Image (cartoon, rainbow, N blue to C red; front, side):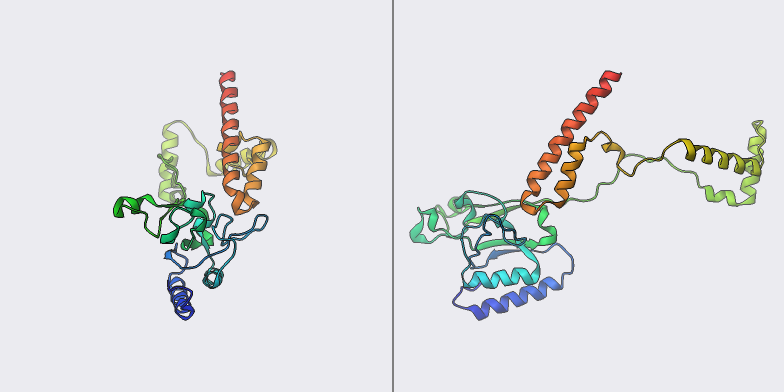
Length: 267
């Protein structure tokens, strides 16, 4: 990205990025590189879905304001401002004259992703050692590493029970063969008797046996405290989401251990 001394070139490049991103539809789009912009971190107590609290700079420069407008237009978030790290692990650029003073280092290299997919990012930090191994000294730009975890929908593993194709009973020949097999076994039930029996059993079940609640069966052991944590985790902001997921996981594990202990005592 050009420097702040070339604002027209920066605007042209942002427009080009916008056209490319709009052509990709709803795909996962990640942009990364040297944006030559200083973004101010979000102050404590305020919430911003695009820029986090863990930036290096306190306020934007001219290029940072243009980049902030680009983030709003493209609905993207800067990943490496949402994870708390040491200042030297947040900064991505240093002046050659300020090698030993991390307070003067800046954050101008960013990784952005659509706000819809921001939760897939689980970590971000800067690394200076790769440049030391390659060039025998710290390069002016650090390598930025992010952790991306794409969660897919899990399908049930194992063989499912095969169901009978009851539509075949609409065929008269199949029905007659079924009746013949029953007669061979000494069972004689007419079609009307089958319907009467099915109706009677259904009516009795509706009056006595309660229906299952819509909750998942494998989570019936969850306590009221865990269910409250789950509801709170669904509505909390992005900054607390990671802590809430950990709290829910710990509470679920505790409930499951209690459930297993109770089952063991019963047996």
